[in-house]
Image (cartoon, rainbow, N blue to C red; front, side, top):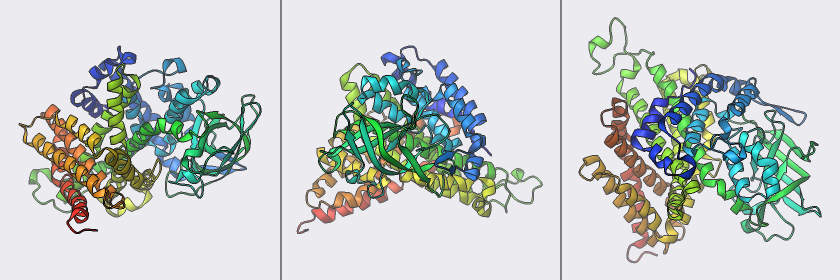
Length: 574
């Protein structure tokens, strides 16, 4: 079966639980935004994704991309589907009207890209960096560069890449060697090789805009000496630039997306931002980029769940313990969805999907506030949320996409391991999300060493207190979440103290701490769903599964970090 978006679920989370429309209408660009417009966008987006994008998922995986004579040919149907995305204005959804965009909230773009990733991750990789390139160029590009490239990137008429990684420089970008030499006319000549470049070469658009992290001749070593240069595939007059694709990688998954090795042979480019400030220019897109990868994880898990739920509704095996006889009819066996082990898998994955969605959509709303609110204090408040929560979502959502897809494959038994049912493709495609846009380990280290320790946990405590105050202590579930928030605040303080004695400790327990935060945030999300949509039976089974099968991990992770800290802080410890 192909993926099917479900707008009703999204409307409930955005409207009933988050109250998105009133929040958005407080922002100047969205003063006219209303529920009717939101509904229309969701319905049309869902229809396009289901009809034009999802049916190409399997052919993208099986046919893959072809590399011939330095050119990349995408799978059959991809060019037409991509053209539909551009012509329908879907890729310009949140871009500013003055740049040719529709000026709609980022939260609607978030829903769209979640659905696109679920329906066809390979195709969705093509425009995956457009939003980041657009924001980077809009904030840091010269007027001339913006005039020449911004409208084309905003619409998706031209695609963009982010060329960071080199064979010797992955997570450690300070080792980048690609060089950019200034020219008399103000341009730069870029030379070097980049690897793992998604969409570095393809036939979807006539031009590709590469944002290349490189080093100027007089730049200091390390990350502080990096600059960002815009290098187009085709020059303004139309000739081909000295940008070459040497090969595309043979990968575990994502066969519909070309992952390229790129070579720049004194290619012409132009500086974006200030010299040796390339990382600053690039990081303007980081929170949005991490959120989009988190949404990929949510979408892929939803795709796996839909396949497993559909199969469990048709497949009969054995008698289910406790199933009432009328449900069996004349069949010789019961549906496997009636078996407790299968029911647990399905409800548990749904609990992750729904809870992560709520957190991701709240984060997308905060991105809208950070970009558009007239009050600097509210913008700063939203930026704090995004800085703290997006690394958590990126890591937790993508981890669960892979683990949950594996659990959903188990529902199929042996049928899941063969290609016929398509669940194994979801598992393969999901794995890379834990690696790119900063590995999950890097996200955890970033959360602890850059967000938690510098202020002793004060910023994290402020976020938790804000969420706590949205709950009702008179409700048992809400009170339980508040207790966990208090434990987490205390843990942050303890970890900050222990880190002063053992510099390696934060790196050792970072994954466990991030997991604690993720589970506490999910507990808050489910408490809000239970509080604001209590009579909707749709949420009951996954909500119960979260409490029984997901949340108990919080105590385990909390204990792991606490024991490590206690060992360092114990009297006589060295």
